Structures are given as C-alpha cells and as structure tokens.
Length: 344
Image (cartoon, rainbow, N blue to C red; front, top):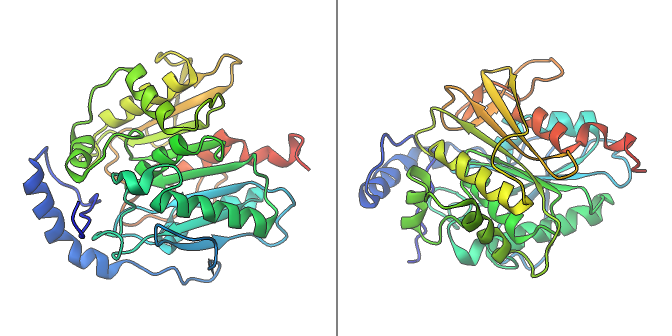
C-alpha cells in the first residue's frame, strides 16, 4: 500500500458501495472527526513509555485501581477509528469493573500518523500478524503491564470496538498463548482482509466461507501446535450499516470451528436492551463462544449508563445506550469471581 493508510471508517455509510466511492466518502467525512477526538490525558489514565521496541508506533495508557490484588487479571481495550484511549476509557464502562472486580486495564492508542482516521491497521498483514507492527506493540504492552502490576499471565484478555474489534480478532488468532479470552465489538473475522480493498469487502459483504475455512485462518496465524484457544464473545447490532451483521455469523463460524464445536447454539437467552444471547459450549459444557445480537442497534459499542449492577458506561458517538456489553463480557471471562476461584 502507499504511504497513506486509508481508514476503516466508523462513519455510517449507507449501502454497499464500490471501493473508490467508499474511500472518497470516508476521507471527506473524517477531517472534523479527527480534530474532535479527545486525548488520553484524563485523571486515572497513566501513560507508560519504554515498553519495548514498539514497531507499531503506538502509545500505551494504563489504569489500575487502588490496592490492586496480586496476580490480578489484565484487560486490553482497543478504541475504534477517530477515537482515543481516553475516549474508550471514558465511555466503555471498563474502568468501573476494574474497580469492582479488581483488575488492570491497558488502553493502546494509535494516531493519524499511523492511519488517516486513527484506526488500528487491522487489514495490514505487517501490523496484524504475530510479532509484527502494531500487533507486536500491543503484545509488548501486555508484557510491560504484567511486570508493572504483577498480573496473572493466565488471565489476560482483549476487547475492542470496530477497527479495534477487528484487531482484537487478529490478536486472538496471532497470540492464543497470550490471551485467555476476547470480545469483538462490531468487528470482523480474524484474517478477513489483507488490503484496504478487501477491508471494505469484509465490512459490507463479508466472504461466506465455511466454518472450516474460517477456522483455518486462525490456525494458520497461531503458533504451530496450538491446542488451547481463547474464549470469544461477539457483539453486533442488527441495524449496523458499517459493519454488516453477517460478520457476526462468520465470526461465530470461525471461532466455533476453532473450538471444534458446532454452529448450533447450546442455548439462547433474552437479555435486556433487546439483546439475544446465543451460547456455544465446549466439550466440557463450559461456554466457549457467545454471540450477543442487539436488536436495532447501529454501529457502536453497547453501553447502559446508570448505577445498577448490570449498568455501565456513558452514551456518546458510537457508544449506544442499549445494554452494558462490558458487564456481560467480564462475567463471561469470569472476572467477577476470579478472587474466589482459586487465584491467590
């Protein structure tokens, strides 16, 4: 690709357009959005430097509650396009559960120097593969945070929104030995794209591959001989016109195949916010993949502002008042009870 890496846009693009039209529209819309993006400087977030060679040219921010327990879990949270680490920190609800459950947060941040829309370059093989570019920078942040906070290497998780969600899927594929679980918000299957052109194809009309084909994309990205895989939550709005809902089905096919289980849910549940949860259990009967379909939700992260136990976050651009995705994801990963399940 050229020197200018074009965006994965968070702008709502109506309908499936040919690539040139979509690119021109995205570039026209992003100037004001980039200027409006907040910087990671709010109280509570700490910038960490010297975390490695940082080949992806990312910035590292962390949040840890007071009196963080020993061997605490670690959650990595990747912002979406035109956003920042502070934006995700302020709206997603993750700091609330870090305080409540006792774990640390890492919030990587990219910039317009890396990508015209400040998107993680999930569609660039040199940035999304194991030990390369941005992916390696995020891995180095994990190593640094575990050293800083004395975290549990067995309890490292990653989540992200949109381009951050797509990068999350790629990180789970590239580093299944690092991440115990992931949550992909309004994102695409791992290894779906390898260029800007195929990125737009994945967004609007993802390839209809077989589960085995999608699963092989993950297996080929992981270290040879990998047999243990992360548990994956998939969040998708049914009215999303930027990342089409078909992506959630392809993600389900991908990760259930990786786990060696079928694509028929073990059970379904109705949750608040007009959300349907489909659970896919592993051979032991434990949830391995969960798909959350939020009826009528547009492109963004599901939040539910309020003081209730299952509420979190604050609404804003691409933070949509429906259901607290961070609460349900944290519970899926077992973060709500990690101190009682044998960890010291």
